[in-house]
Length: 143
Image 1 (cartoon, helix red, strand yellow):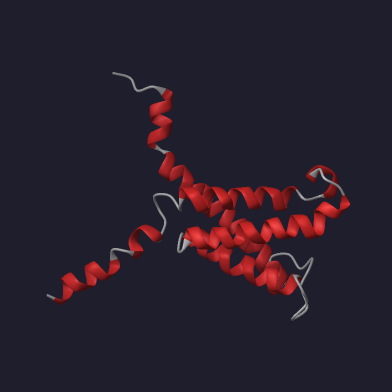
Image 2 (image 1 turned 180 degrees about the vertical axis):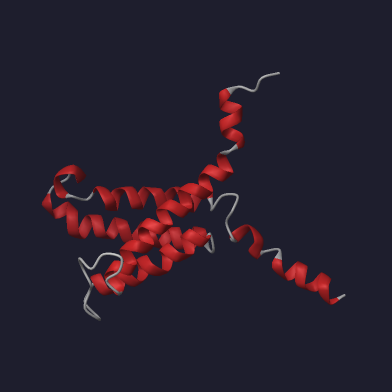
């Protein structure tokens, strides 16, 4: 019997969620790397201690790496989502309500993408799924 399109798509949801997490994690990581070390784009390297750019860069670098790896995905995504909400309301919103007019589209997309990961988790290929099992594996090896 042929599966319905919806059933086939639903069966691949954990994999699609992992791909979504990795892509958004890498994009966020690249923002952090650009702010902290000027790579891959040296458009804006934040001076040490400059509020909030320097700290935002480190938050983006660390949470981007964690989200990409799927390690502590939910707390990292929560922090990243909050940072993007803060960025939108402090940097973009004063220039108008609509993201298309105030150039806040990236902040809004990152905020809601990471908010999705807070509730959905990291997907099938996240290290979070293995984190809880590692102590059990070690204890079996000791026997």
